[in-house]
Amino acid sequence: MKYLSLICFLLPICLRAQTPEAVKLYNDAVAAVKAKDHPSAIRLYTESLSIDPLYPQSYYGRANSKLALKHYEEAIKDFKKCLKLDATNAKAWYYMAYCNMKSKDNDAAYENFQNALKHDNSLAKAYYYRAFIHLNKENFNLAIKDFTAYLTLEPDNEKAHFNLGVSYYKEGLNALAIQSYSRALDIDPSYEDARFERLKLLYKEGDLAACIQDCSYFVNKRQKLESVLNYRANAYLKDEQLDLAASDFKNLLNHKPGDQLAIQNLAAISIKQKDYSKSIVYYSQLLELEPGKAAYLKNRSIAYMQIESWNEALKDLNVLIEKAPSNGDAFYNRSKVHLQLNNSGQACQDMRQSARLGFEQAFAYVAGLCDN
Image (cartoon, rainbow, N blue to C red; front, side):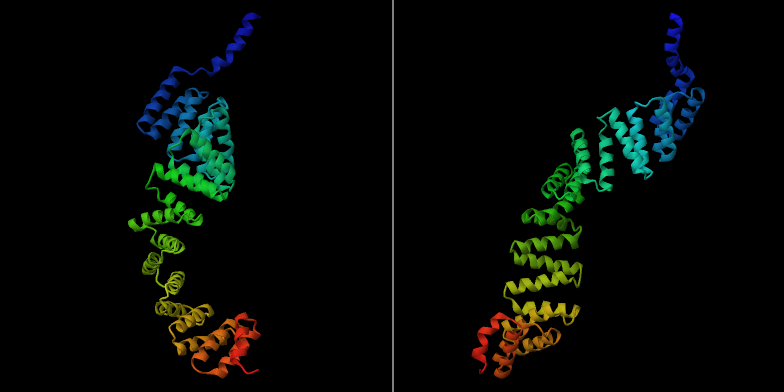
């Protein structure tokens, strides 16, 4: 009875022991893999398994060669066979999960990355790829946790820092996103996606000097010019560096003719700099793009008034009032123009109408302009 128990205990071990012929073929397959001859490796692994179908390493090796050839579905089948024989093989779980990802089966990939980490929580890439699954499913907080876990093990992967930054941004954590983009750029200063995403957040967070510096990197390399010129011009504008802002908006128009926002900003800069003649040019361009637009007519009429071009101002105000008869501001300004043209009766009528429409500044002038 004692001997029978010993035989029963040893039997599973004996069944799992590999034959010398199978081991030799397995080793030949490994040599083929080292030579990057995966078709030969697959053939040799298959011959090994024909001799010993309970050889988990041969299933594992054949699966990896199929993976190398991008035969993901076939690789998954072999990883499953390997894991039936040895469910503790963390790398088999990991590579099967990777094949699942490549086969667009993220649910299976997630489950298998979980199994890989259960057996070996030092498998850095399992955290990395699982983080992308979370990212694609918009589970940004979980993506942050997995990218952070990965970077604890592999701190010098700029792409992981970048995607951690994306995850922070999606969670509204802009300061942490900027830090992650900056870390990616510390590792690889030429990582342009990280720099571009960082400059957008720097602008949003009001760090204008840093935003301008990142924009200038792209301008100097003549890359992403339309976007970065727009960001840099607006950063200069917010920073009251009006000449530099105007220069960038003009440059932007060279690359994107007819950009209304750029022309609007150039017109606004001209007003701020009291260059009313130039602002008239820009508002005229805008009116060619959008004839009759009230805001452009109003601003151009004010610019005409500033340079005392009363008849031109009157023309714009007439069109504006025709298009927007409830605009008390327009009647007020036209009253002022009529006054300069010595049309006192029409000046009074317009001032009264401005007051009727509720434009408060008109009330102070009605009595002086009109006979009660």
